[in-house]
Image (cartoon, rainbow, N blue to C red; front, side, top):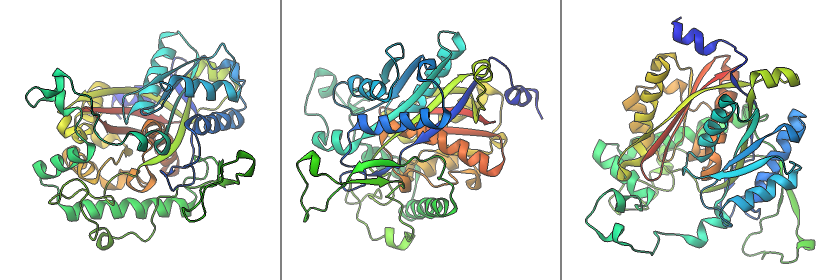
Length: 411
């Protein structure tokens, strides 16, 4: 074992440890089980579960940083409402963060940095997105035009490129076939279905009381007192019987001659996540048993029009800065924005597919933008625990040409 690896696995009072990592079910936007829930309600649910399961006093949490991409009220007021509703005192500060798909993972990095600097002792990195509430009313490329956007083609204009087009760019420029994309998507569903059946997600996913979503033919009940409430306990986008052959029948969404379909892309979803971090010294003082340790994270930039390839640059940067090799990593949680970019990154990095997304990925589970980073952290620690292994990486691409990669240790 290398000296660097020994140092990473060593336990020190100054370590930033993870006490809890939870998420709501991720459900399909508009028609899924959480479609009638506001983002602040989803966030409140996972924060309340964090307090309940850890039995901590809310006042020990110095700061809550919430990843959110699409929220109205500037994101901050919706998140702050949830934080205060759950019972965090006014002494617990809050803020929101938007690094697109990596928002809640970046929140964990920033909370960890604050703990290491000594400015706080404990914090929560949360994430939430109701794509039902905040995505569909504003669908499409923004209509606003400035001099930055009407100039000749370039990075400034490419940041507005629809994500599906970036997927097509990756597929065409790097030779990712439609057949390989559909095969990858079918495998994601198969792994997720098997994971749910085996109980893999039982501890990670909390149950949420949600307003019932009615079929169009039934009509929606308008009066709050008439609304029925149901328990939502599972991701509802996982298709157990999905096959490469079935996926091959779907038409491309973004280009008639393209390869990106609704079946080999991440699902538009609703959900929330929360990761509780603190110093090991604080955890010891409170008698709390960590489930993991945050080690280090990086970001990397790539051309906006090829944003999906970013993990292939962020992961090597992370490994270089931590003195590790790809073979040292036991589990990778690579967010499946699209099958095209996932396959490119897997091949470029040389990742052993047996180590990749053991419980399935966003193609099957869903991708509520602001909540996904926290979900990946929770699922990574879950997967490491199941395998009785130690080292894992969370990585994802993000709109505007960015990638995130974070290194974690299971305790």
